View 1 (cartoon, rainbow, N blue to C red):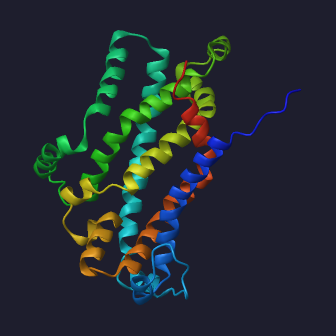
View 2 (view 1 turned 180 degrees about the vertical axis):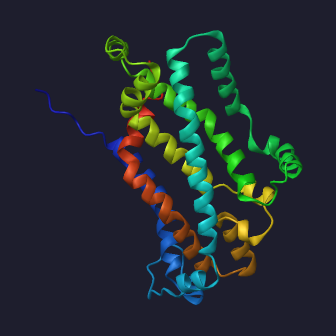
View 3 (view 1 turned 60 degrees about the vertical axis):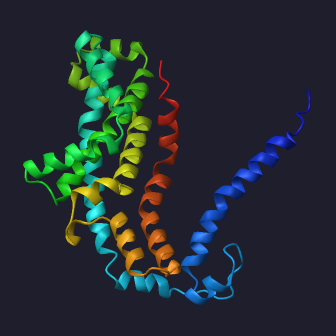
Length: 273
């Protein structure tokens, strides 16, 4: 048995990349626990002399947590729409090779090539015409629509990893398409489901352009707009802004931590068969 030689070059590049990733996170968290004076006098990578939670108190007292309610509604609704539409569509694409289904799948692929900035003005006028402007529904619908193409590709790749023998076994047992989909396909596609949940949740949680253009009142503002307004109202209060950013990261980070294993499995299945 030959002894494997260590790859020092790869290790050096990996360490360098790790530093690049960790450094901004360290600066963000450190600044959120510093006073404005300490943050101004010390360097971004320096070790803080003292820590304080006053920045978090400032964020909470400013009403910033109100934005989390609106953001949570947008995120949950977006994920719900994606989970309702994408798995049946992906199942039809995998099991039905007709021209109509193939055309629908290609239409979903074309959706990946359409940037949000190119359609934001038509969406704005549509929402005004249907009396949805300045509502959370106006943010939810386009956010879910732009999550559908990639989510469909991910679910299609995940379902294609299911062997044809399993479908034949279910058919021999007399199972119809609905039973095959519900009792076999969905349980075996947990990785793909976790992937589209995290992906669509990230899109909704971090969305900025749709809330900025399609909402106006403070009651319908999400936290990305809250960060923008907080920064405007407190121009150079960088520690308080960093505290608000840290608070906004925590929920979606918890979602990722709980779903990371299934997420990796789902991404590995994107290539499909």
